[in-house]
Length: 359
Image 1 (spheres, one colour):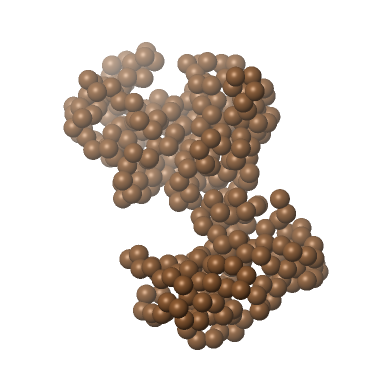
Image 2 (cartoon, rainbow, N blue to C red):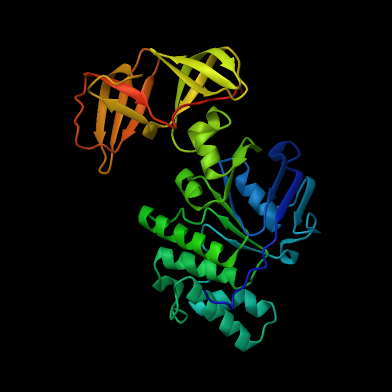
């Protein structure tokens, strides 16, 4: 790690922040959150949920209608973007095509009044940090999409902001490059201890890079937690289905004791965390990869009909039909062929199903 680029990481706090457009449309509705200094937090959600507006309010590109925003201990609610110590990496990269890579990275430093020597040193350090040492004389048009994205990251890093913002940074890259660049961003963030707020609609990307994920829906926070919290203990059906895929299955709770529910689904009984539910009808969320299918009957298994089998290279995808719902299954077991049309046996793995709290 090059020590010429340092971290000035600060926390970000929203206190009942609302953003209203046109007097009536709430893009963000009474959102309160804290992003700890030195962490990477992802705002995740479908289009129109308010995640990008939230990011732009941190940057000062959108002004708050109600509430307060603090960066560190400073109230920045009414400060323009130019007076906030934040840097933003845009989806489009926003590089100047007529400037070299070095000039692009140096642009903000020159405006800050740094000496020519210090500006060049920081520019070179920034390029080295993103793996582009020796590229300073090239034009953006001579770089690949992934390299252009790294230039945009270097340009933001050299300003040593309190908060670094990413707005859908990988959406213009192909799948292989997306994996590579997201790993690089995560490594830089951890090495420098940066505060990063990252916006994406890609669930896998969010799970891969984040210390914490804030899932947004209809201008509000649906759930906030670590990637594992959200994946294993979704707050509701929306989060269960949005963070990875989930089968949402009807079930019946027959008894609750010491916060453990006895749950009936099909021909089997399960004991699961009750999550505040009582006796009666309920729903389970079950991840497709946490289900076993077998041609032979297993203990505590449910007979189902295999209606579709799809080979997708490194795993199989199955659709099975049960008496209570169709169920999607992902299996890495490639050797045992299960014939379509046959009765097979479905068993939930551990950890497997989770009860969904009432919405």
